[in-house]
Image 1: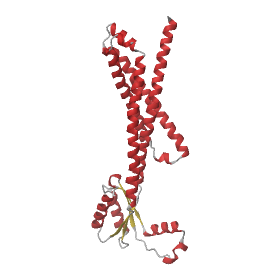
Image 2: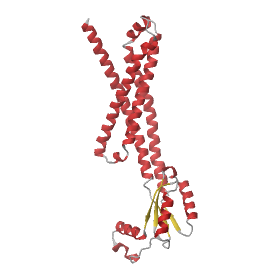
Image 3: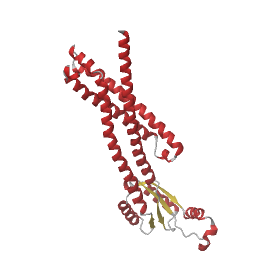
Amino acid sequence: MSKVSGKGRKGLRTAYVSTIVGIVMVLFIIGLVSWFVLGLNNLKNDKIESFEIDLFFDNSVNTLELGLIEEEIANKTYTSGAMYRSSEEAWNIIKDEIGGDTALTVLNNENPLNQSVIMTLNKEYFYKDSMVWIENELMQEYDGRLLEVSYQDEIFADVNQRLQKLVYFILVIACMLLFIAIGMINNTIRLALFSKRFLIKTMQLVGATPRFIRRPFFWSAVGQGFISGIIAGTMVLGLIHLLSRYNPMILEMTDLTLYFYVLGGIVLFGILITLTSTYFALRKYLRLNLDELY
């Protein structure tokens, strides 16, 4: 009798572990895709808020007044930052990029540049139409002092279209994987409960209520979902760390907050899907009569 009960407990442990392994693999794929989508969006936002727009002011505007203008621009709703750059600083940057004074002999080494305020945009305003509106507003507000708003039109299309298309493509793949994952986890839970169908029916026959029968299975489902989510999240973190050793750009897509969003998401998803699958599987077995169990 003890050998039989020992084999039963071993079988239950094996079924529990195999269920967790199946859920972990599915959650790992979901977590990896989720991190990649969020990481790409994070990378896009970082790129947007590092793109510089030059506001060239007349050299007759004094430094004190430009300091006030810089603060005004930095506090506008559409800007993420603003920085004053003198004509000398801009001239030195150009000389470094071109290769020293000898490359500028055609200009007699005279500084043709105006002082400027370097502005960066918030991601919500990083569109061509918004930029045209911002340019018109600034030209009117600083009329006679602001000479030019300089930026590349192409950058708006490059950032907003190329990266966004990639994000949308991966989102479609992620949705497909989500449906597949739900089906796989649901089947895994059903198979695990299939092996306990006689135990469920026995409890029912001796007078146990459906609520009493469901309770231990629901707690088991919560445990399976939580453990599977933590293991899957750890595997995602390990893979990110491994990939970052070969491609440093991976680190630019990742921050600690982003990772915890992914970890929390897959843990919650794991718990919800295991609970839902357990509920429907139990409802099926509770409704079957004894003959149908075979």
